[in-house]
Image (cartoon, rainbow over all chains, first blue to last red; front, side, top):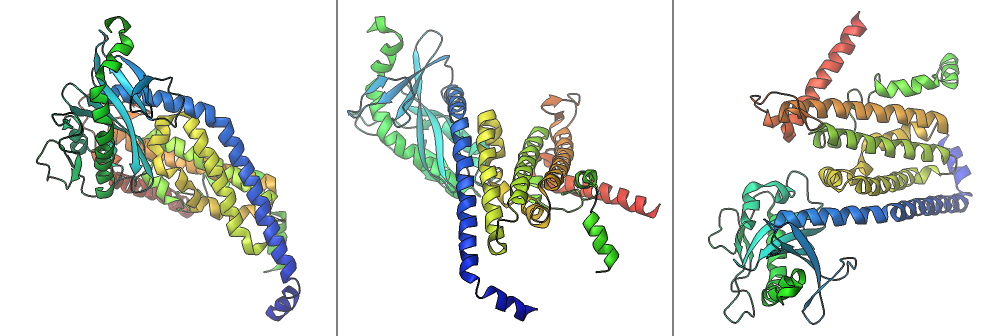
Length: 235
Length: 211
């Protein structure tokens, strides 16, 4: 029987290769079409939902606010009000309390995690010069291990008052935020890691460290921009 | 194979049988013990279990239909690659659909949505059933298996949420004094609950077989 098969398949090998190629390419094209169609069909709604989730997250990372305004960072390093639609720009979300006082700002940042890009939001309060909140917007970290960065209470406690104070000439951060091993935190600018989620927790520390180095001095010097955006008369 | 058996095979089971078998006699979780990764991982609450079950069922049904309709067109040598491609496509579609329904749900299910691609239940139905049967039968088989999977996941999710969180679908069912069994919503609780259900299911079947 096996001899029969070899005889019959030998002359057909080119024909069957062609058939395989056609089948794979054909299925590939059908699948690509289906994926593109569903992507286009759901894109708009996903964007709306993501924007809503982001808005909710802003309230989580900057405590005590009731209103937010979106600003974008221009090439010259200044902040201008924005509608938040252009996702390629660096956006920040200023938060105000009931009496329209500027309370703090939520900054979006991202970087490489263990599995994929991590997108996070952290809150900065210029008055106390600290990071006051942190929230994971998007993560594909390992369930049960890396995803502790969203759930571990000890880890989240890092971001209640993380010091990002500026030097006296306001040009840069005195002590950049750095990740340290679990239990090794000694200074208010260090982020205690999580054993079992070393890479993910380290990534969060680094993302905030890198982003705050650039954003915090800019924001601190331009507090007036955020203040006047909601109280045009006080200018 | 004896001639009678061949005749039996040709006549085949009725279509209702194709549907029913997945729900009970060949339940993918309780009998075949397939697709354990999502069963244990995402059954910590009833709503997560239900969403995961429905997402898997959708992928199963759609990929079974497509595989069976293309079964004469796919050469044997590239069949597994083709099935995985088809399954991955529907998983991507489900991923977009869940994101469009609720960002929070998508966050809760996390990486397990993408992991539906490697759920052996789906590939095994494509290989063992859809590649040899008509589209109608494959759809029924997938529907039965899919609902059987949803049923099993819900059994786990409900027990774990009631005991571990004192609630079902987020509604509190126990009085305030109830002390939650935290272990039930942790990974270990998944194993305990699965073992319990497997025991009950097989015990019942054994008793029935003896009677």
